[in-house]
Amino acid sequence: MGFLKDLLIGGTAYKAYKGTKRPGVMAPPGITMLGMEHEGWGSKWRIHYVEDKNRNVKKSFTITPGTTGRTSGRYQWKFQWY
Image 1 (cartoon, rainbow, N blue to C red):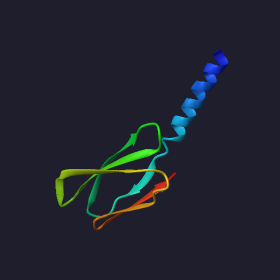
Image 2: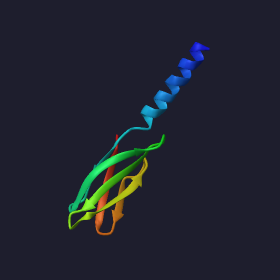
Image 3: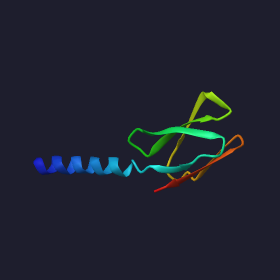
C-alpha cells in the first residue's frame, strides 16, 4: 500500500509541475502588466494589465499553451512558452 501511495503522490506532483510552465509575455507599448496568475490544475494563465492612458481600469485575459499572440484593440501581445 505504501508504494502505491508514493506512486500516486509522485504522479500528482509531476502533473502539477508540468502544468506550471510559465509563459514569457511581451506586453505592447502603452500597456503596464500587473502580473500573472496560474489558474486551476491545467496550464491556464491569467494576465492582469492596465492601459497607460486609463490606469484606473484593470483588465485581464486568459491564455493556454499554444497561444503565441493576441490582438486587443490596437495592442498586439506576444507569448513564448518555455
